[in-house]
Length: 144
Length: 218
Image (cartoon, each protein chain N blue to C red):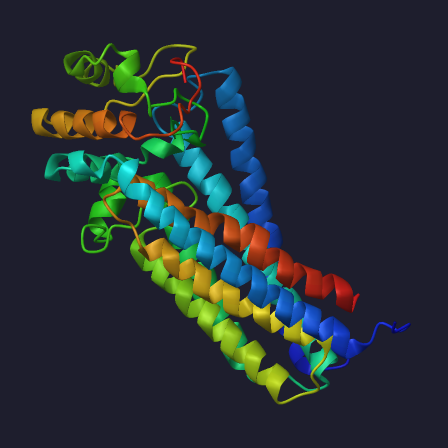
């Protein structure tokens, strides 16, 4: 057995180790791609859902809310909001529409975005699609 | 300081400290908003304060380790920087882009910022930590590539050491992984997966490799 840890050994571990883990990571990525079709609810990804996602991004919703666990933790999780609101699209639209422009004294409030009826439908369809993604029941409770 | 070109680091460090102050200020705003829900509402809603907070963090970290690279690579490679002028130019490009982006966040609603920066052409905005307008993201790519080129040329034409080789691997990763911020599919699951490549492979994979090489140099 070699007693001394040489420079070339260190180099081999660095390059070899990096290459090994990069390949392992790519293999895991490949495996993840294989697992998606059964879980990602792509069959319900309509034009309206895609438009809803753009609307979601354009208004930086993730800057306050979380979506499937990731986001800002200032406002409620919305990955399961469709189910939380009893699968009632009108209730979600009503909530968004009713936000006061000047907020609520002393409390947090969602801004008033003045969405059109078509935009409200888009965002609701996006939230419905999101709630039907198989996330292994994340978040673990309905409150988010 | 053994080499004159090391002095470009000063610009980067100064700006990094300035941005750190911005980060802390907006962090305090957010902290207050947790306690007093209506603080600065609707002028600076929580999501706006948060963007300024996290984005200035990202930029000061980048500037801090860019400055550090410009400072230590000449000593390590035993030569002047390949192009100090490029380093100074890129500093100003980066600083102006960052400042304009912050002004954009604070002065107009986010949806308006998305519209005037042409987000519809290549939608990349509105994802956590990747809130920057697409044009700012392109700026980051330019700055990262110029940085990689400048450091790469210095390293490859100078004395090669463990430090500089590890650093170069990290810098290649820095440039490569950020490119995934331009991939924003309609499919939320794919979007979040590749979002993770930028956000987490940057911080936990690439940045830490870069910083590890610095630590070794010390």
